[in-house]
Image 1 (spheres, rainbow, N blue to C red):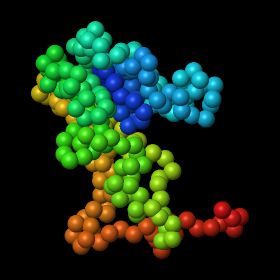
Image 2: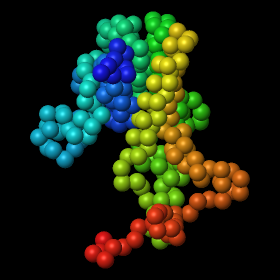
Image 3: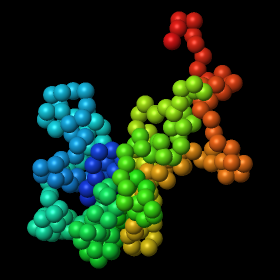
Length: 246
């Protein structure tokens, strides 16, 4: 059976988690994803995971989680010759994804306007912590910072133990999934318009979406959610200690 994104080429200039996880969704559904890394500074997740042998081979389990089904190339984007190679790839691509500090690719002559001039059908997605513009736009952040900034961490835990960070990097993964949906939507829209577009995917925006059931109450009554995650008086939603113990 033909997979949904067969014939779609994605240039993936992302690292660590949210961006790579978004392009991974397209890869497993058939897209030709070409991952671009610096020759001397590869994706830092390559050396992360519990298998030390894999880490030494730069194939750590944290990397493999969102890097399978992709091809790879190394380019030093500070070098003009390598930027020219990237532009040649862009001319053949449907999607371009990056997750560096906002403004970094514009400074290299690789911003949306420059690449759209090469390929008007290109869908250009930028993943960041706080978005491409605004007072915090230039700032970078990892998952735990967004958990804290958004307020999710403050409402997680118990009355006595809070704030509590999620055990998994949930904001990163949610941003990756939301980003993949945005890319799929943009590809669908391009079938109608014939043109590409810019996607601004901010982790903080996604964190706000994850709190959708709380935000109306905050806006309507200024009621701040309390960390009562395990004190909800409803058996289906609260943990119950079994006879055998925890």
